[in-house]
Image 1 (spheres, one colour):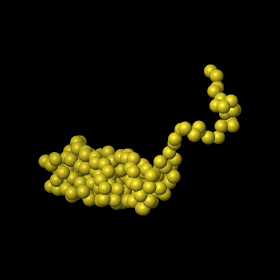
Image 2 (spheres, helix red, strand yellow):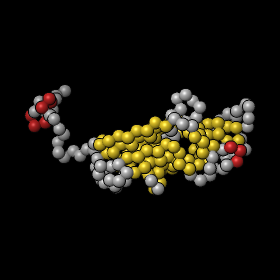
Image 3 (tube, one colour):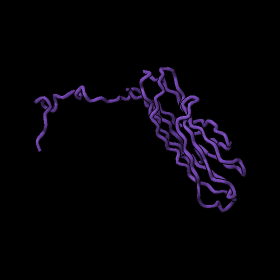
Image 4 (tube, one colour):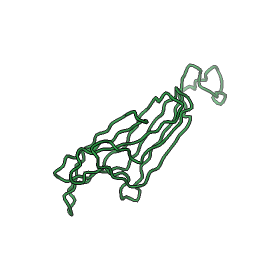
Length: 169
């Protein structure tokens, strides 16, 4: 196969893409690692400790938000098994996630435990150069019988991460 040489240059002489190709660049990355166990058992959204700030350098920048949450839930067998996660930027709701767990009954009590997939990815346009705060919030469908969303449970590898990447327009 023939090698195409733009403008009859050698491959090593090419130092940039042609001007007609627009590309975004990662301007900054902010990452947080959260390891403290936290239980949320409210039927209204409560902010978790998984929260991170970023200050965009341009109002036209976008922010890629990526979460990898170590979350699980447990409910009494008689309860609904609905759990909810939400991504907020300051007071603006960006994304919801609803999860229903199922699983084996714990042999020592009447609870069902299950993993909650806490991965979320969202491309945001905050349109500001002021600091913005991204937070994961959670709630449960009912509060009966110790229904909980648990962040960073007892696992020794039980950490959640939140990563914010500012992307140029």
